[in-house]
Length: 331
Image (cartoon, rainbow, N blue to C red; front, side, top):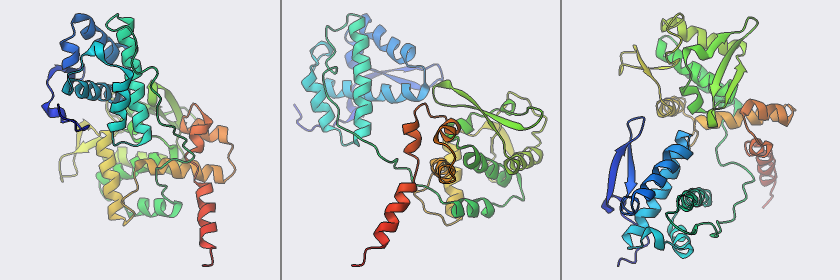
């Protein structure tokens, strides 16, 4: 038996099925070879219990990877023990946070197998994860000056530039995640009578309404007018792709990946650090508001965080103090 803790996933046998969205899913060999009860528990866990598509993708990958690891060592589904789970986690060359995600996925999955009487005990239940204490998030912050330079560097003489400025403006002035911006439909931008608003669908299908400030309203209006979208079908996507370099909009929605690549490209053109990302705007906005004395509870509401401790992870004020101290070292 190979003693190398790493596995070659393509070499592990699996069956393919199609998800509801048409994407190929993986039915691990240990599941398909363990009978209909195991197959039922797998499908119930992936498609019934996991309603968030991001969680479903991450948990399915984590569980399938572990089962492939066990299959490569000829460990049957019913024979998996806490030792196997612990050794597998030790073999992963991932950050502690990623290992905790994998362990959480395994615990939930094996709970499902126990409930469906496929196995007797949950082998991941007693396995302890690595201790992880996050004081500050790792997402790099874009400064106010850099953000202003980025907006000013965009050529807005055509619809693509107007579209990109509107997207970046929304990321800055609403602190929304890029995934939520990509989901915006034409109907999600509307006039309430005294102000314009954007309705975002965030993690866990939470819906949030955020007022649109005057300059952002101008960005969006200019884009809609140039793209002929002012009176478009309300069910269509707010931000659309283009036909290569023709600067002509299509009817296809921009994906989060499309928007991330666009932001990266705009940052590169503006000579900004390559480590910055769309999430950097969220960090900058939260830090800026907290620096102005805006109450944490209000900033938490804008960011859509359920826990104020999550909002504090985006606060870079303490990091700036640390840099000032470092600069004062006289050695």
